[in-house]
Image (cartoon, rainbow, N blue to C red; front, side):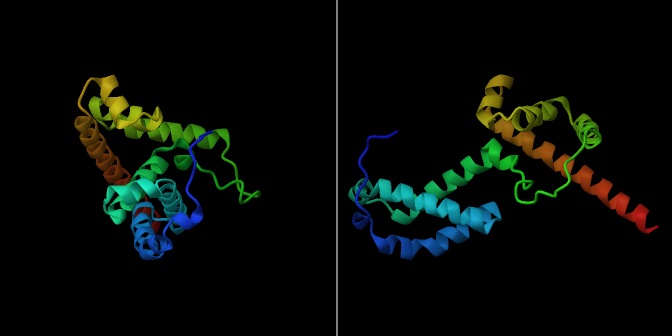
Length: 178
């Protein structure tokens, strides 16, 4: 728990919220593709601005730039969090069908087959970043390559996987219609 004192709510300029909420929410929504999550991020951004109000006013920095930077960092943190990637809607729908062991086995087989289509380098990056939930920098350190190389390999690997899955879906759709 922090012992830092927070400014009173009166010390936080309300015009800041009025001036920046709409554009900030729009920006975050474009990043997340989710209005409710965007609103949560914007709210957290303003909380952080309120916590640093005195310092921000003294710095003379662009408030909008600071807000966008904080919001972007919060979005990145949310997207990287395991809880966000593994969120489940089962709690909202108690009658939802739970996957059985056959579904898990089939998914594992399909995933293994897809990963087998990648080069060794691309497979390593995908495995560390998505399966072992490592950051780009952690993966780079483990593999002994620059972070940019990890990003590039991940990009090309995901593109290859997307193209392959898209081809399979197109093929399956044409088989059904025939």
